[in-house]
Image (tube, rainbow, N blue to C red):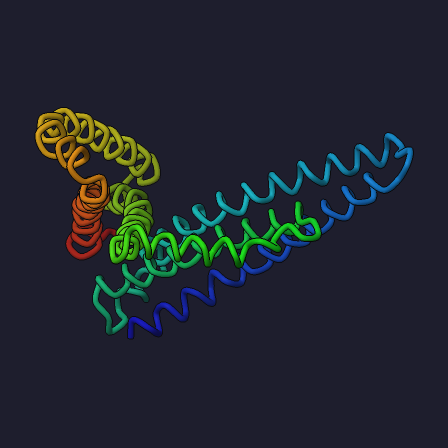
Length: 270
C-alpha cells in the first residue's frame, strides 16, 4: 500500500513540478542563446544587451524559485492532505499513519534530489562550451582510482556515510515543518499562527540543544577526535561523519515521533 501512496503522491506533485522543470531548462537555453548572440554580434545594441541580462536574471530567479516552490509544495501537500477536509478521506484509508507519513517524506526527498539535478543541468545548459566536459570521464576514472589506491574500502564508506547524512538531513528538513504544523493544527483556533509559533519554538530549542551539545562535547572532541585525527585522519573523518549522522538521526526521530503522535492521537480536522 505504501507503493500506491507514493505513486499517487508523485503523480499529484509531478503535475506541478514537471512544468516548472521544463520552464527552467527552457530559460537556461534562452539565456545561453542570448549570450551566444551577444558574443558573436560585433557591436551589440543596448536592447540586445538588456535582453541578455534580463534573461540571465530571470533564469537565476527561476532556479531559486523552483527550490523554494518544491519546499512550499511539500508543506502545502502535507497540510492539505492531512489537516483539512481531505484528512477525513486520508485517515479512513486502510493504511497506518507511518505509511502516510513515509509516502510524503519519500516523495519530498525525491523531488529535492530532482530539483538539485535539474538545477545542475540548467547551469550546464547555460554555460556549456565545446570541449568543457571532454576531460570529465578521465577525471571521474582518476578520482575513483585514487580513492581506491589511497583509501581502499574507506572511500566507499565515506560515500555511504555522506549519502546517509544527506538522506537523513532531507527527512529531518521535512519534519522540521511537519511537526510544528501538526502541533498547531491540534488546537481549535489560530492554527496557522500557532504552527508558525511552534516552528520558531522548535528551531530555538534545536539551536539551544546544538549549542549545549557542542559545548558538552568539547572535551570529548579534545580527548577523542583530536587524538584520532593525529593518529589517523581516516578514522577521525569516520568519527565526524558518524557523529553528524547520529545527531541528525536523533533529531529526525524525535520530530517524526512528535508528528506521528499528533496525527495519531491529537488530530483535529474541525
